[in-house]
Image (tube, rainbow, N blue to C red; front, side, top):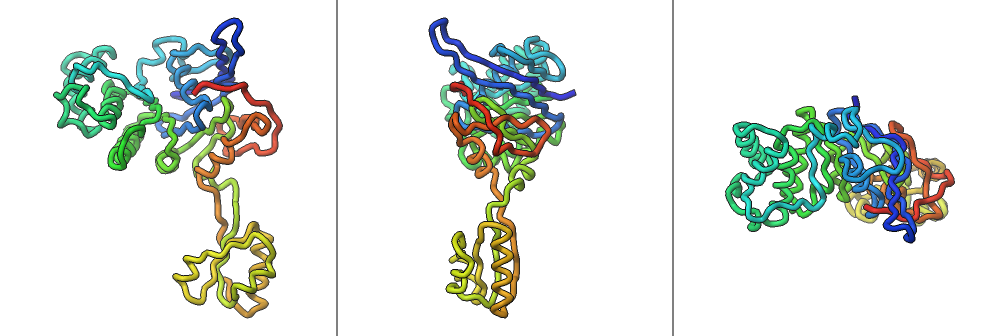
Length: 340
């Protein structure tokens, strides 16, 4: 049973009868496996928060279905084992951190003894145990973010949905949250989180989905998505002079730093495999030696920029969940707009 599953999930916003409707989410079909860390990325307005609100029953879909542990998201019972961190968590300013967690524990139906024990454990895990009895109004933005994480896990959920969990955190805070997410996954908790910090997504996630203008444009393992496109080939060789590279035509880029670091070794990029073959032949012709031919693959940030950086005329059709492909040549229309 998938912790999260959607089928043709579509959300259309119509503010009033006279206002033009906008599509926040269009035809999202997705399945998240249990125990995985799943990244959900997209530009502002791509539909990430709309998806999360629909999963949690805060927004009703116009078409399609969403399920948590096989239960429709329209049923409050689907959220019994879910922890949620919104992008901008809000707390009662006059309560302390410990009292805040006790309040959320009561909302989750936890008995008093378990609430107290779990509150102390959660505050310790997120690194603010020392501020447990201070009023929330004295907390910094980063401390509030940590408190939001604590309330999301106090009841021991099987699924944690985190909307921008690194928001407002300094580098040490981000490191601590990364460790917490990995610890949750090791404990069998499924973590579904959206983030604009792609380096964190790349480091943490088993799988990732990319949204653009309300549509799913790619989904798969992080390594597969990043490896799907080779953008150039790096050549390392001896026996060539810089002026010899003119014979290879355009698109050759010399690595100046490597040239200074390794005397006698020339390192340069060529645009594709055919150019790499021509470079190797030229090295052999000059009686040199080819030390390495290394494909240079896209990073997740580059994949994201390529997929999510399109306007209406260049929108791509969605890729079905479970694939590690990206559609780069399919025609398709875009939504009129979208809510984040």
